[in-house]
Each structure stands twice: as structure tokens, then as C-alpha cells.
Image (cartoon, rainbow, N blue to C red; front, side):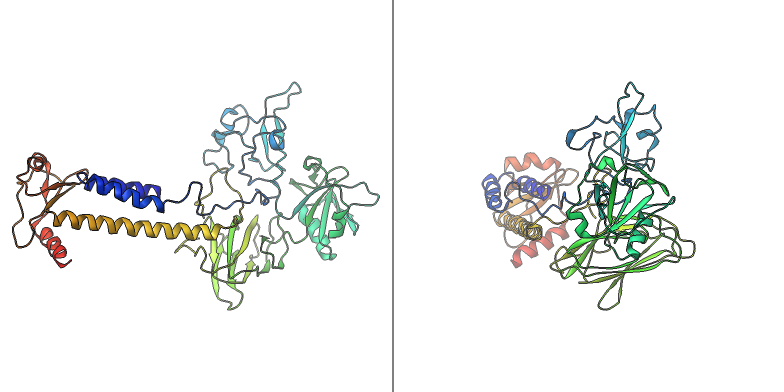
Length: 477
């Protein structure tokens, strides 16, 4: 909008070069329409939501550049200065791993959590994990102390040498519990919400044991439980909260073959907004469908060959049914999507022919969002301001042109070559339109004026037919 206003002002000053008072009047008329300093059309940001949607933080694109949160820990080295190591910006030219000329924590090798290179110590340590509080997938409730007397989660438990996060989640889901906790890489515990009331949180770095069944996942620690909600990776569910996250079946493990799952989304509001944070299906036969829950009509469909476009996808449906099916060979990471209800179906209508976005997310800007209070009102105000400004500019320019022509002025606009300058012939007021590059200038007529004659050498008049049409239009007014 600022660029449009600047262009309109420049055009006005070019056309009205000899009419400075009118140009000043235009600027004065627009000053009351300018938005107040600091006003915004509504930015989306919620620090309470996670910056990661994969259990190992491989999708982290945040800005933490030390091994500890809030400036603690050791500073990270820049990725474009680590060519002597296995991973650097040179080894990631496409930016797939998020490496570049920065020193933000990343996870390019699929480790259990984001990390970075640090200045080598005397012990030969040259990299460390990053403790990032915001990089925990939604559904992960944190690391808790488990002293064993009483246990942190009071439900059934078990052990497995093939334990993964989803193995434990599935076990506790089948037992009818709300929470699942993994400990020491091989132990699983189940519990309920009431167990959290007496739980003792532990530092996130205490849950550092690799799962016995998956080298890219963490399963608690020694005397430490990593606790999850069992809804993560479920094959069905009914989501009614104002906003939340839906994961593919078996997440954070890969989904398996012949899966047929469905989820109902009915948050408060008249419409829904979905944002895919992760989407990786094996082939075109693995398919996710979005249907209107009321009519059953298909709204969108995505598969391994047709992923969703980046950015928010707004659907004019109060409730959705999501259906996912995989074929007999299906194996892939799956998807993670966030949703939120919109109070007004006409608020932020869906862009024609597209689904974010910001635009595509920047390398380090993959941040999940929720609306700031007042964002819809601010967006509506911005649209009204844009419309009023555009109409006002066009109206004032037209009135100014009309005034020029009725005052026997010559309008000179961009063009090429020297013309023979002369007054127009015909009934009514005498006027003529000239043009030249790079901008237009208005001069008084008749052209016997010395200023007009001096500039005429580089101007060319409009064609006779164009001037005739314009003269007819002015006469009609």
C-alpha cells in the first residue's frame, strides 16, 4: 500500500508539475486516511505453540543459536564455517536441512533432537544438542521425574527391546488411558491427567535416552519420563477444541500399509483453517481427503504425487471429516496439520486457486501460529483503507485532468520523437494532449507560450483518433 501511494503521489506530481497547490492539496487530503503508526492488518503469532512437529525436531527452523535456551549454553558455529565437518551449508545447497549462512540449531542428520557445532573443547567435543523449549511436537507434555515411589504414572506398564514412542502410545491407548510415558529407552507407563497434578517436571535435557526400537527418537531418561497424550498418531478421533493438531496414524513412527483412518473436526466457528506442517506420503495411492461433515462433499484431496500447497487452507465448512487411506505397500512419515476454527465464514476468504502463506515459509521461519486478538477487524480495516484510497486517487486525478483541459492546458505524457506542436482544431475549448517518456507534464495552451514551445521538441501528440475520443468524453461531461 505504501508503494501504491508513493506511485500515485509521483504520478500526480508529474502530471501537475505546474499545479503545485493542487498537489499539496492532494497530500493533505490523504493524510487523514493514512493508518496510524504501528497499525497492522493483523499478524499471526503465538509463542505458546510448538516450532516443531516431528518428534526429533528435524523440521525446526527457529532462531536459537546457543545450546541452551534464552542465551544459556555455548554459542553455535555458523554452518557456512564448518566445512571441516560432515555438515555445512555447502553440503545442503538446496536448503533441505535448513543449513545456511547462520548459526541456528538444526538436525540435518536425523538425530534425536536439533544440535549445532561448537568450538572444540579440550576433551575433543565439537558439537552439542540444543535445549529448545519450543521445539517439542504438540502432544508431548514434557520430561518428568519418576522416583518409582509412587510412580509418576500410576497405570499399567511394560518393557520392550523394540520400544518406540508410538509403541507406547498404542499400548496405553488400548488400555484406555489418556497419557503414555517412555523411560530409559525401553520402558512404557500409562496414566491419567490426575497424575500430572502431582508430577515433578524435569529439565528437557534429562530425557536423553534413545529408544531401543528407533535411533531417531528419545524415550525418556534414567528415572525420567517423557510423557505424551495418547491422541498423537491415533487412527480416529473427534476434535472439538478451538485449535489443535492432527497427526497421521502411527505418528511419530511411519504409517503402515492398509490403513483406513478418519478424524472429525468441529471447532467453534463457521469455517476452518488448516495448515500442513508436514506432508510426506509414499505414492499417489496413499490419499488424504477433506470432506464437509454435513454434506459429505469432497472439498480437497491430496496424495503422494499431489501434496498440499504451503500456507493456510481456508474451507467454508463448520465441520470436516478427514479420511486417510494407504495401500498395501504404504510406508512414509505421514502428515501433521494444525487447525483452528474461524468465527465468520467470510473472514479471510480462501484465495482463488490456491491454499500460505506465507507465502512459502522461510528457511528459519517455520513457526505455527494462531490469530492475535483483533486480527480480523484489523484486516477488514486495511481492506477498507485500500479501497477508499484507490477510489480517491482515481477520482482526484480525473477531476484534475478535467480541470486542466477546461483551462486550455496541454497534457504532456510519455512518448518518443519530436512533433510539430500546434493547437487542436474543432468546436469547443482549444486543448491538446502530448506525451513523452519518462513522465507527463502539464503546460498552458495555446502553444505560442515560450515554455510550451521549449519543451515541444521532445514531445509527440496523441493520434487524432485518440484525441477525438478524449474530446468527446470531456464534452459529454
